[in-house]
Image 1: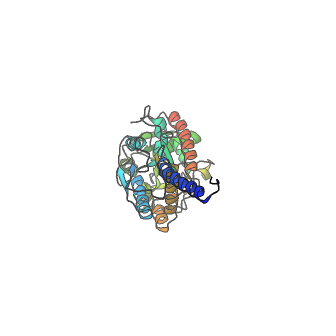
Image 2: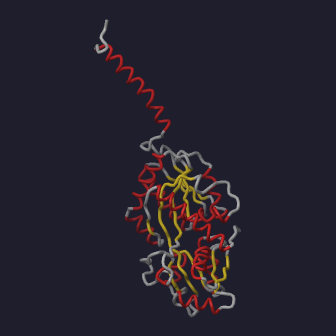
Image 3: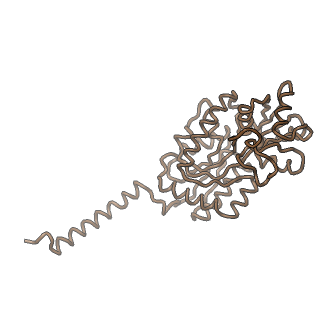
Length: 334
């Protein structure tokens, strides 16, 4: 009778263990796709806006770097419509396998309140990957107005029978709600004038048909530098290196005021944790590259690397904040 410790028994037990491990390994891999092999095919990065705007430019910059770093093409897919909801809807209902990603923006946290009915939930249906960058807005006025500071802006508004006019790229846009946020904290006498897009709003501001605007910095900066518009204040917590002489709204009497557009990457809910972590690592690596920092700087954007958990917390906070502003302003989706 063989002892339980005989060489033959040990050999059989070892063989059985190896065979079992061989069977379990593929099953484990199927249960939790590893990040090492990802991506095995091209990845689609859906952008909810047309080509050429700030969101698209930032998406393409990141897509190029992720392609270089990860050995597969990251292809930008522009799906414009309904203030980015069309693109968000596509990604929210895509398979959670890392093959489809979304360029998540401030608009998605505004739209959660702005639209009465959406086919997705911006918090529940997306897996946050990481923040890319933030871009402040600037309060600009037509230079013919006697306004050179926030205090003078408020005085001019108070002296205007209908309030000082402020243009926006459309009702519920971040440009509009930056103005509404300032109106809430300052109690300023302001009248909103919505346009269909930022370009016609800036054109009328240059022509004097409207008096002010809380515009995205990249859009107004060339006009400020040329003297065609006057920058009164910037909406970020800190001054911009591109406009070092322009004070913040926070230092102009409203401490804590910090409103910025922002851009992030998200995946459909249920995307394996290993893939989310790999994407986050590669995104943060790209944001540290000197050429990426330089290009973002030209767009007045500040890189803001972090973890998926930090982005999840940030999205929840932004959704709460804009819920309050949208309701107070009475803004509705156009």
